[in-house]
Image 1 (cartoon, helix red, strand yellow):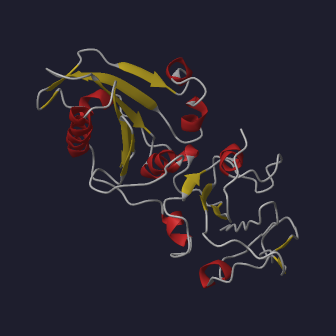
Image 2 (cartoon, rainbow, N blue to C red):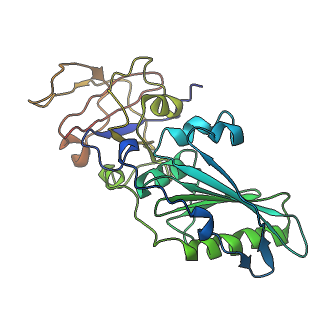
Image 3 (cartoon, rainbow, N blue to C red):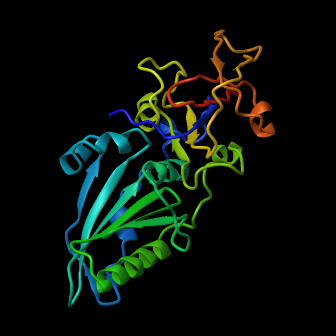
Length: 276
């Protein structure tokens, strides 16, 4: 599926692998124990379903590749039943490390609230948050005032059982501090993830892999139609490429990076990459 962001896009790439797919921490075989058996009047089911990287498609069909593009290890699914109202389903994903938990949370995020984990978002009857190496989704079978309160209460209770919340990946801080569309940052590793968010090319011209960290964001300003700049490759970069693009980025944080490749597409976009 091809998806284009509506304005500019800035991409920062680090080839010194920090927290990507190849750096997954040891898998926690007792993930279900992180889910409280009792949360107020809600009781956890005795049985729990678990899926790993090989069986994730048995639970999530097409979207399984999104989790597998990170260091996903397993997901545990349980149901909480209360005296009244619909059941609540909880999915606890072990994403292998905090950076990838943030990454899958950011993948389709539209907004973000604070107060649960490293950040949470509620869309209708589903509330998702990330914390440490875990990504958690809490969903009600139907949406009512009581179910909205239950989503918050159950999410907070689970958050209290998880390791302390982590900060977003360091790479996110390398984006400009101002001028970005709110919550547009996307942290990922693979070429297909980039093309889903912003179609660049069929070929993997940035050489993204499980050993790269990347972040994509959308600036609010559109590039002018006139003006051209070219990028300068670092001395140790083994491949020489030259691109011509609208000169809309003068931010010091970008011009000070090791190299910046910019490409003009429709609509005008800017892509900047960093290699270490």
